[in-house]
Structure formats: structure tokens, C-alpha cells
Length: 116
Image (cartoon, rainbow, N blue to C red; front, side, top):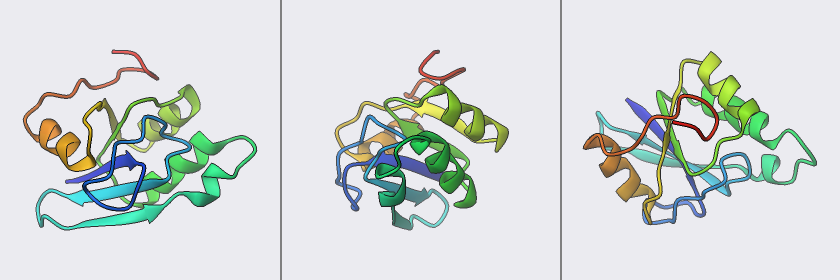
């Protein structure tokens, strides 16, 4: 399973970025292999508008099964849902902690943008 976490930096110890669309980076964790990679989100950060949609499209291309973030706007949520990607609210301090909470079933799945 591939889990993408919106992060403020490019390591598993980076803080979870509460902003999905304008997150500095996406950390992609492969739960089967234990591998991870950082994907820069600079192009969406500098977008005048549509950052959420652009970020959601990037996550879809990464082959994600789930996203963990603090805030996912309605347009980004729609793109993620259309791609079959489930979205979870994660308020952990680090991306790695958020993934561990996900694995333990402790994160709420969002049923719409920012709603449970």
C-alpha cells in the first residue's frame, strides 16, 4: 500500500503539513517494502490558484492508496476520490508518526473535504 503524507520537509521526521494543496512536500511510504520517497510540491505552492487540484493530480500519478493531511479542500478531495484514494486526517507531529497511527487504525477517514 502507498500512503502519501503532506509534509513540511523531505524526511519521515518532517512535520505533517496541515495544508494539502500547498504542502512543501509529499512523502510517499510503501507499507509493504518499508521504502519511502520525497516528492517536491513547489509547482503547486507557487500556483496562483488550483494548488489543491494540481497536488491531487500529482498524488494520483504517484499511485497512492491513501492520503494523510490536516486540511483537504473540496476540489482536491473530489480529484482524490475520483482516483480511488482515501483521505485521512492526521495531526501527528511527524509524517512517520502519522503513518504509524494510520497502520493502527487511529486516523479518521474523511467522507468529504474536511468532514467526517
